[in-house]
Image 1 (cartoon, one colour):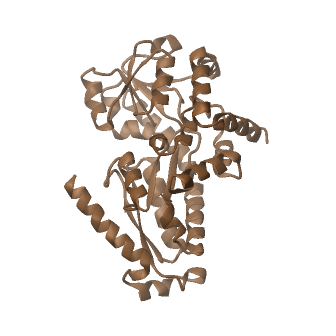
Image 2 (cartoon, one colour):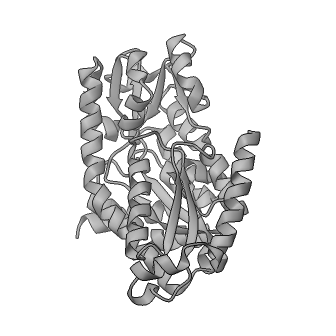
Length: 355
């Protein structure tokens, strides 16, 4: 912990000096920068994530960093700290809020503690019947949802650059087959520390148990819990297939990663650098969206090769879950938490799916 604090202090000082224009090698970078960036001061920014090595989130953040440096001709240098080097998602968000880190890439769920409106992503299976293009248009396009989320981020002191996804989802692994809804009764499943996620599992009869990610493997191994839920790349990266036999495609939560920046630091950027941020995000998104689908398919295949039995549900299963009174009540509760954004999200998904 002390080592991490010292590292953050050093990074914060370097970042402050860089953004104020005191970074070294200024003349060298002017030789490679062109156009609207040529006369701007060079800066260095800190980007961090806690994604597993090789996971979609890490690949996206790395692609963003590379493209931002390329777009600006090296005038923006990105000091990238992946794989939890500076802490878990909650740690990183707090550090970004305090200005110790400039940008954070992460999944959406941890943001509920900072931005209540992000609970709209907790609506179970709300994205499950839509394709990646429709979802991307709603989340990153000129929509009411994008406007509301951007405003909520700004109010909390952050600038939302965008959300990366391609209609891939969090899945469930377990030590027993989950072929039908009744099979979930009484199963102890590890969840994130998210009350809406926990209420979803309770609503279908399971027993949600929040645990730190680092405790999950041993808890599955010794039988403290029966199951867990994660994206396919995370499941394989953590070797959960060694202690779980079944992989079930519940598609209950969209596997999405957000990228955001400390608002004060974003506001202090030159207009051209703000534009570069957006361009880099869009370029990374264009590159990564096809990869996300391939990663999901590839990692499911690898888990199957390693002995897991994979179950894919069809539409009647999802309809059955969404028809439960307990799930309908959860939808209403979440919609109230987010001041009606849940209804807006459902309407926009349906409207854009028809176009």
